[in-house]
Image 1: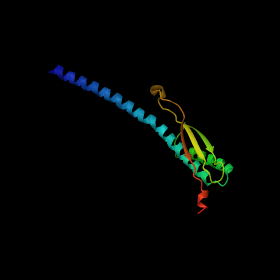
Image 2: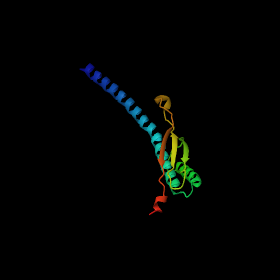
Image 3: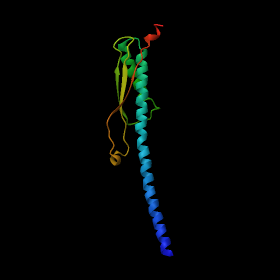
Image 4: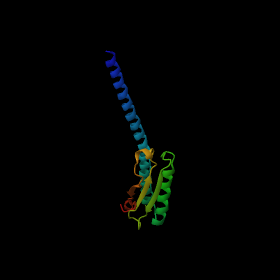
Length: 139
C-alpha cells in the first residue's frame, strides 16, 4: 500500500514540475509580445497623426515638415512606453494642393528573451494616406 502512495506522489510531483515549466514559458512568451504591440501601436498613431497633419497643410513643402514633426512628437510621447524601439518616419507630401500624400512609419521593437526564442528582427511598417482638405472649400 505504501509503494502505491509513493508512486502517486512521485507522479504528482512530476506533473507539477511539467506544469510549472510550461506556465513559466507561457508567461515569458506573453511578456515578450508586449514591446512589439506597443511599438506597433505607437507607429500606427504616428503615421495617422502625420497623415492628418499633411492633409491640413496649406503648401506641399510645409506639409512634409509638419508631418514629420507631428510623427516625431507622437513617437516621443511618454504614453507610448516603447523604450528601445527604433523608428523611421518617411513623409510623402502631396505633389500639389488638393492631392493626397502619405506617411510611413517603420518600426523595430526590442525583442525580449530573443536568445531563447530566436525571433525575427525585421522592420515592420505602418502607413496612412492623407485626404486633401481642399474639397471642403468647393462646397
